[in-house]
Image (cartoon, rainbow, N blue to C red; front, side, top):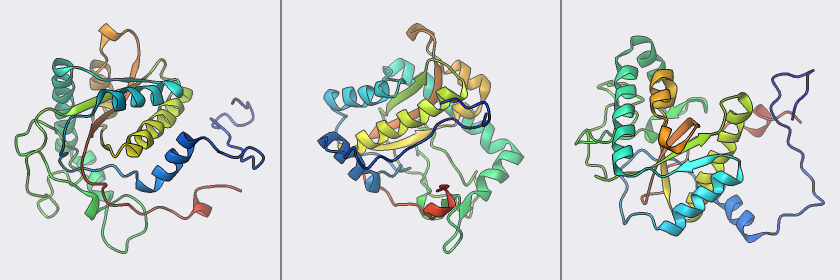
Length: 238
């Protein structure tokens, strides 16, 4: 929606009790909200079935976004770009300090990331997981082996305006909830999209125009620990 009086307003949500949700798919997505947690640990189990991957692609398409499933060669290229973005982030003093400041200990306000939600690095160095501790020895977990053939999905939008960022957010949530319905876990590799040059390089020109909004690692594994949330009154105006 567009309102010249409120240029920062991207969308409005209206609750209508006269239109009850009855579709089984909608109910399943709603119930998945309480179990959707991104995880930063290795995945286990078999590769994702093609019908499940197709549902994830459809979920993004429903929100006017595109979820690409790159092959081996393109996945390796994206992992190299992600590794470069991670290296830049952990060696930049200002970003390293900011990243560490987001980690919160027990009893802290529900902002940032609890230390319990941090994960290890890949022992082989192949899968560049985000190190929010930025090499801080006090919080750096011992590296462990991760999956050798990670399944990476690339969420893209046709444009790169604020409305496209909003579409990317709704598409990401739809994809993640659909994955949760199928007991599929997700890990967000967002290092590349934080670096304009590397984000441009992440585009696959063979797929036509599009803007990379997120890289998602998908697989089977533990549900993951919940992280604190702010009270509703602090995030919604009623």
